[in-house]
Amino acid sequence: MNPILLAAVTLGDKINDAFYGFDMWAFHFFGSIQNGFFTVLAKFFTTFGDEAFVIPMVIVGVVLCFFKKTRKYGFALIFAIVIGTLVTNIVVKPMALRIRPYNTLQDNADYWAWYLGAGQLSESDYSFPSGHTTAAFEIAVSMALVLRSEGKKKLSCILPVIAVCTLGSRVYLMVHYASDVLCGLVVGTIAGVCGYFISVLICKIFEKVKFLDAIDVDKLFKKFDEKQKPKYIINKCAICLAVAALFCVAFIPSLTEGGEDAIRCSYNEEYDCQNEARHEDEKYPAIDGKEYCKMHWKEKNAEVNGDQAEE
Image (cartoon, rainbow, N blue to C red; front, side, top):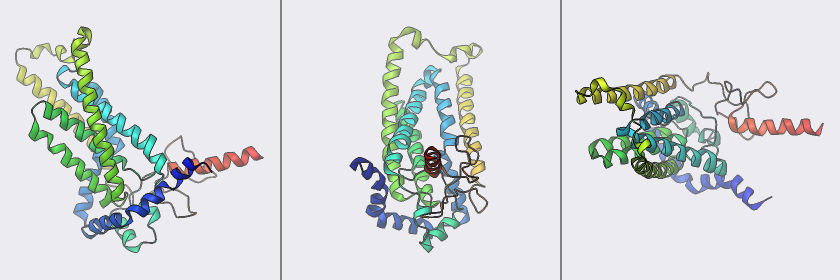
């Protein structure tokens, strides 16, 4: 076998071995503080990294780019999310191939009790690094840097705190190892910093190009020209309400996710896969009448296609 391919296949196992003690310590800590209130709180904070919230935030970023005063926020948000997503989902996860803890630790009675106690949530892909943590930090860091550049230092401190809470929620809910979220922190922070500096560069280009600098939807609100304060209050409230609405759309369904009624992957060879089956995704149709998660669907589909090709 190709040495590079072999390394990729076994990297997840190597990470498991290298961080086993640290990861289990983290599970014990969060498992020891489990209760109903903290579980709901964890689901609240984990929503800040959910794709149902993060993907629409790209659209918010695009809208912000059309306002001169919020252009830097918009570009920073867009590039931070794009960079973090590409690194996490296109590069690192396929390279590491680390299996989720609720699949690899099914024989650990303590972990399994904590997993059930946290609501038995599941994802549909690999574990390393944490995509939720990456998303939370790429947004938090990029926006915090823009806020600080505009003298809003106190406000800029809130976002990283939310990102840290999102990081902890992923381990509390037992869907990620602590080492997964730490890697997500690093990737998300780097993506956020890159997004900010790219935004600064683009905004400087806009300032030097007249027709680009002239792009400003704010000019459409001419009726507020004489009363600037009401205009900016309305704009800020509209943005805040849009973000809050997106968050609620992502958070409310999370309260009923997981549990025994969740449709899980049919794979049950090395372990009984607890990943979420992609039953509502047309890209991953049932194979021989069985539903699979994203990673096992690709494996089973290759097997079926291979058998058909041989026939």
